[in-house]
Amino acid sequence: MEGGVPGGAHELRILVFADLHLDRAYPWATREVGAAQRAAQEITFEAICAIASAEADLLVSAGDLYDFDRHHPDTGELLRGGFERLAPMPVLLLPGETDPADRVSLYEQVRWSPNVHVIREAELVEPVLGLTVWAAPFGTEADMPAANPGEIRLALLRWPAPGLVAELEGRTDVSHIVVAGGHSPAQAARTVAPGAAHPVEPEDPAGGIVLLTVAPDGTVHASLRELGSRPPQLPQHRFATSDLEGMDLAVVGEEQTVRGEFVRNLLAPDEDPVHLRRLALLAGMRALEGRPPRR
Image (cartoon, rainbow, N blue to C red; front, side, top):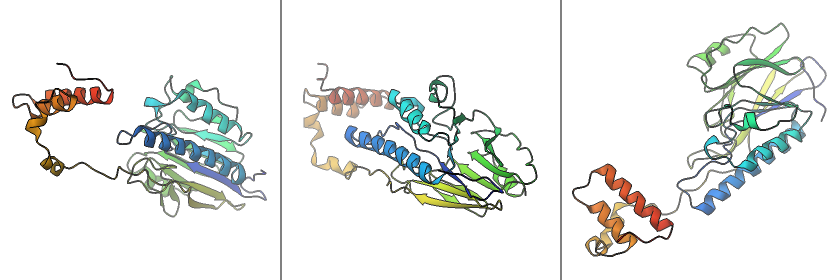
């Protein structure tokens, strides 16, 4: 698509998303539910790229793009291919808390296409002529340099230090501020928070993105847009201690079975809580693996 530049004849459109959390673990979910959630996150990524291709001149990922602790080997190729297909559109990647840019991260291991720029520390970049983006990763306390006359300045912050947003809102050379880190979207006069692109917790709102439109006169308008993704659902049945009332635990504890060992472990009167938890964990793991208890 044809993009514009500030002061030119066309608008400039910037799509910002955050907290996609590809490959996230869902410890409360079944294996099938977890797999479905991760597949939905990949679909959300493809949707973001499709929207950017049709409507934007610049794509920005504002942190927690994936979860470093358990990312799949194919995730790097998914991201590389999606961003490469947007070329020559610039793509800015700001690492977050779950995807730090250390030497073994995808930010360092993936062979990104030339249109992708990874922001590893606070820096000022000019992805499009006339537009500068001052990006500050998580924990940054650096000062933003002053903008030049006529320059459109966008501040991109990841969990900013206390008071930094208010400080930037008081500056006349900052056109708009994007704040990422929380999963809930929010908007004020010159500040917008995209929230999570895909909800990852049951209490999260629907996933969404931010589309920033820079008019030819340099004014910036931000609009929040839902992507249609909904929060994951907790299991319908939540265990309660009242469920034990119908069970004869003394009889169960005499069984030479996994559940018998499980009950004996938890009801042992002389065991300390930490040891009990470890024994219960061991019995539960054996049960999940289909292994019998030790006699």
